[in-house]
Length: 114
Length: 115
Image (cartoon, rainbow over all chains, first blue to last red; front, side, top):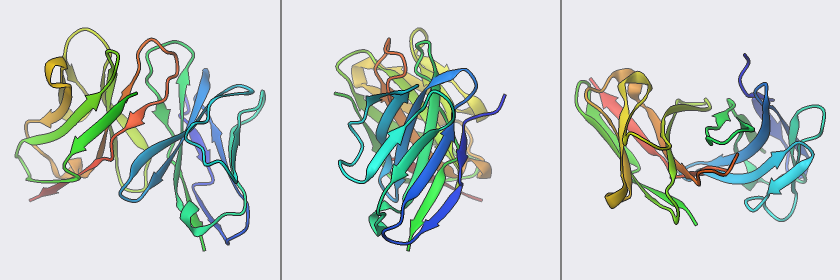
């Protein structure tokens, strides 16, 4: 049973370009979360999605960032017009539909903006 | 609102010594509590979790944590440190009975183990 799959693992973008990070949840999981990890700051919640719905985006920056979890295919975290401050590790996690609140993390996508 | 405070961003121990990583939480409802470990350039791996029932929770790799409601704490311990325990450790809290509620993480504690 494959875990949470994220790709790319490493991504380099120039300032102003777009970054797309993909996440396939564990089989049977319909809840997806995105977290950002900045040096010395721990993990910050960004967004929580279920299939075709954004449930909580309270941690998403107001501009340039968007997320989706379509009916088919992986969840996508999209960052438009990247800036150096966007350089970070982005982690996706998933959980099953039932309560229990254990979420399982992917290996992360490291974005470097040059 | 919920929050987590991890006391000490860096902890250093000798191999074979006791490991104690501190975590205090704030929650308006009885929480679910978690400890995750992160090795360099890797994702987070669940060490253990407390939901209900026994307050002393045993996890993987010899770690355990005790939920103390009166102290609002969930400290992580291991009797004897091993070199392979060197990593970053995160405490997290969530609200129970809410399917898929996002976890709120502490800032992490880096554990160093010397020989």
